[in-house]
Image (tube, rainbow, N blue to C red):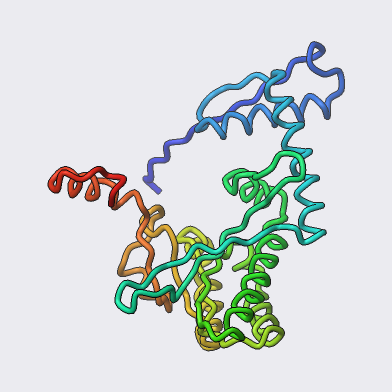
Length: 259
């Protein structure tokens, strides 16, 4: 239809018989090499090698350990406070998933969250963080502290169709007001299946749950497009603020780290 498409290609190569003598193993190795291309930005050729094999083995072991961690409910949740300057007190906090590996110590969320997404563990991980956050909200609430907690929800959780029911179950279980729970969604998760996202968001909003969009500006949506979503909070991606931060620092003779 007179539309021009520019395509890129990632090509993984494994050699017979030097690297494998069986067809399925050759294909698996070539696919691992292809995935290695993707991690480097794509549009390149990669030959399977010992480094890729080692990385693949490490990821396989890490996946097994993550499954055990989730089955034992050992993911920890830290809470990053947000200080409201007007009353000068903490009114909200953001839930952060943390994995303390028994042998490797802290595993970066930048490692285990993408791993959970690739291996289908993200829904189990997400629900664990959501429940522990509701439990903490209840602990604060029963102590006389009303602190709203923001919990990130992955795209897979959003389109699974039972997020609203999970929220209902947890609000009832821990006897907490819905207003103290905030669901954070990424811009990309809203764009993947817009109609489903809108339905679920309206359902959550009707329950009194606050809604936020994280990392706005990293995808393809616009402010006018966002009018379709029942949002309470819009979090602008940090990349939009870096230049302004540097300019302000230069004009005020302050180091960027001071701001």
